[in-house]
Length: 209
Image (cartoon, rainbow, N blue to C red; front, side, top):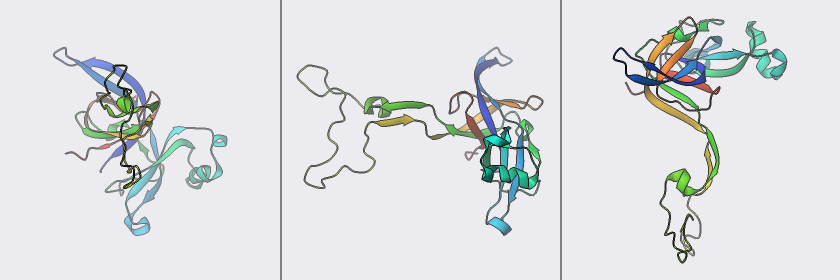
């Protein structure tokens, strides 16, 4: 990818186009990201920049993390992530990356941690069908058969079973940037994105050109 930025999901709202049509959008506060390290193919085997996002007090970070900022004499940040970019020559240590790295109309992929929904059964988790609800069936919302008994005598890996739902890394692909406000450092993207309000997200060029 050529450009990317870290941001925080603020919430959803709607805006209206010139024809008066309502467009649902998600507000993402994106800046500034501070470059704290550059990685190149010559030194590390790949191109990337390490960025920090959102100020935090030094005493709230462990020493190894705090040391990364002390080494380059920058203020400490809450989040640190690597952005794998094709070309890092234009970036320098201490440089700020702001909302204007993207423009209105760009198509992007947005990654974040989806909302956790706790432990769920297979009907809610995988949208499977239930059994008959009459009293004699004894099979309503159960899993059903999960494997043969004697052979192979085990449950195969990947079997759809009850368990934790949500709270996993999710990416929404090829969504449109509706508005970019460089002054206030926020981006409006069309539709919903993963995560709860206040959660960290990464905006990057879409892989679906």
